[in-house]
Length: 302
Image (cartoon, rainbow, N blue to C red; front, side, top):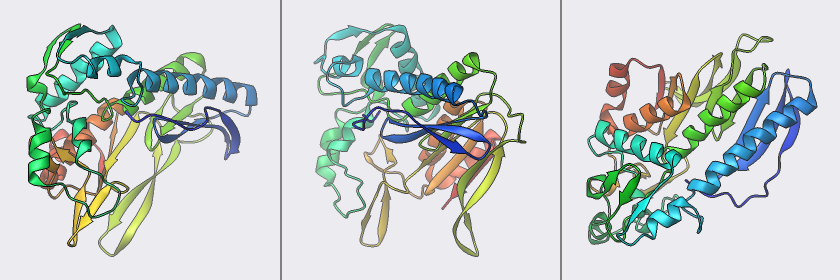
């Protein structure tokens, strides 16, 4: 999970038939759209959301030096006991590893040591990738809740699941705190707290592809549930006319071949939507087939 670095403040702006709380967390722009004209309510809910987002970020960011992730990653082969929240995320990571046949792996973050997806053309050598792969693999981890032990040099990174997890936590807290409908939007990962009363649904734009022209924005109405998007629109390499996605297969250490540029999935929760969009990306050329088999509403851009 990426760290913040931006000033931690909440700003309130007027929107169309709503008030919008804005702040930054997890290296993403975050918004809380509240169906209310009460500025005090909008600020209270937005500050509640921001506090929870910053709490999760502080606890699970791999950039922090004194949180649970830092303690796990610096254990140097020793066992470490974790709290219940951390254990639940480790269990979820284990589930995704099993569902994806090893394509989703919360120990694969160390591959960033050889890959830099900044739009440039620097590819790592096969030898460099192979060397880092010796420290990748959930199957190498001894996890018996609440005790975790990893081999020296291995790391845990919740970046692939943390934002969607936080969206769901914030949506739940806002639902308990207010009867007003709110849309939680953390960098394009979304959840609705309850159906709005002053409109049919919240208007959400997602990028789509037309065979007749360039990508365009498709607007959908989100009345309930959540959306999550996975993709490489901003993180990729371009070498010899070949675009390399930042979506890496942790079994090989190399980008997934023929993956869509982006996948957006609608589901009951943001965590579910994020899980399905990520697993679909990891399927590469079979992404659409995977999503159709799952029977979920989705949009793919290739």
